[in-house]
Amino acid sequence: MKVSFRLRSSKSLSHFKPGHTAYRAANRRAFNHVERFHKRHASEIEDPVVLNEQTEGLIDDISRAGCSLHNPDPALLKDYTHPVDMSEFRKLGYEVVDWISDYFTQQLSTLPVKPNGIQPGYLPPLLEKEAPEEPQPWSQVFQDFKLKLLPGAVHWQHPLFFAYFPANTSAPAMLADMLSGAINMIGFSWAAGPVSTELEMVMMDWLGKLCGIPEKFLHSSASGGGGVIQGTASEASIVSILAARAKIMKGRPEADKLRLVAYSSNQAHSAFKKACMIADIDHVREIPATSVHHFALQPEALERVMQEDVDNGLLPFFVSVTIGTTSSCAVDPVKELAHVAGRHGAWTHVDAAYAGSAAICPEFHQQYFSGLELVDSYSFNPHKWLLTNFDCSALWVADSAPLKEAVSLTPVFLRGAGNAMDFKDWQMPLGRRFRALKLYFLLRMYGAESLRRYIRHHVALAQYVADRVAEDPRFEIAAPTRFGLVCFRLRGVSNEMNMKLLNTINASGDIFLIHTELEGKVTIRMAIGSSSTQLVHVQQGWLRIQEAATEVLA
View 1 (tube, helix red, strand yellow):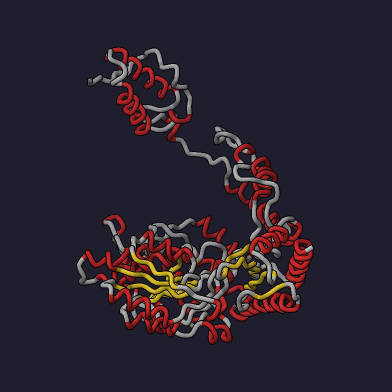
View 2: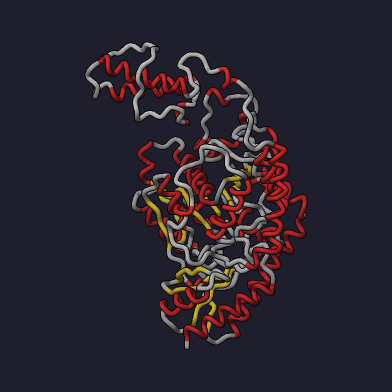
């Protein structure tokens, strides 16, 4: 049934509200709304005259709300005035910076690390059911932030935050984020953001040299390799797997994708397995790593599993090696594992998400980071332990060609000058923030030596805790202490008792630790790395652990 649209006055439908914001849109949106209404009700209203009248009634409602199906209302063409202009922003900005400064210098140490007494679903009842129709004053918005939102925050910058791995921030990086947010340049291509593209190339070279990675990974080497900032180490794993698959599949039949096998230790982060799921890799091997070798993947075990797969007609293509596993900070032998992978034609990726920051210190680089000259990709997160606000995950590839082959796509509207430098072809998403600015500000305003002292400070604090654990006969060290992580548990008790200890430690919310399992045994992790943590806080934390042990063992 086709009904003609004629603009004439008619009774409107009662369930369409004149003046509703949905009808205050401009020309095209109004027409689409009428068209949808017509299609939706054409089958319900048999009388074409009635349908026509009701449709025209809707048109009248839209017109009264300030829209037209043909020509925009002249009032809508007048300059738009923002409810918060730049003069107001200047004043509010000072207030927010003052609050942030007070948060770090006065509030943070007095707050609980994690919220107490709240359960999932606590927030919706505290907030309005719908977005407001009219602007609300800043004083009310900021007050609600402090009274309704902040009580639900976990304070990752708290000096007694010892859970997970750290998520550092710093004044230079926060300032850079403010400027990046203001400019809001979406630098997916060189043409869309020349400075964000080129500064990222320079910063990845700066950071790579600071960490002592091989020259083949630097943009300046002109060897085809280079670095790129991803959002997380998980994204770095995904694109590395895609690059490895593109490389090994070159010239092979499509059916060979079903034969591909990826390898890691069973201590590798779950992001590895998730990356394989996303890339649709059918065969994934998580090879056991035990306390006999301090939870490091052994080359002999990798060789045995890879050879078995080859004998069974499968195709090894990717080996994920970890420097600083999440559970125990185990360090896989990079050089030896890369040799094994190379013999089978597999890509070697090194995930140093947390521990990679320590490579800026020559002593830690020499001890833990040898063998990188043999690998195909390497990543770590400056947003974990190098004072760079989330998100900033550094990934280097020795050859960018397979990566570009795997994820490059340039539609006609994105073609232009500098396409060869486009970082959209080094990542999964199209859009990307101006993240290199954080590194630029940080590296200039801290300097390499200050950053080295920062890393060494946390390593020393972790060793201090490990020494205290060793002195207390009730406890045992569960894995060698590396970097800023101490793994311990009560000696000779059940998993339930160690969980009770952890829950008692965390009960007040004034300190926050988490647990893992090592060979089936509950193990408590104390990860030292908050930007505000000092010796006094570590001593305070250890005292709380001892008090909790006395309580649960009583």
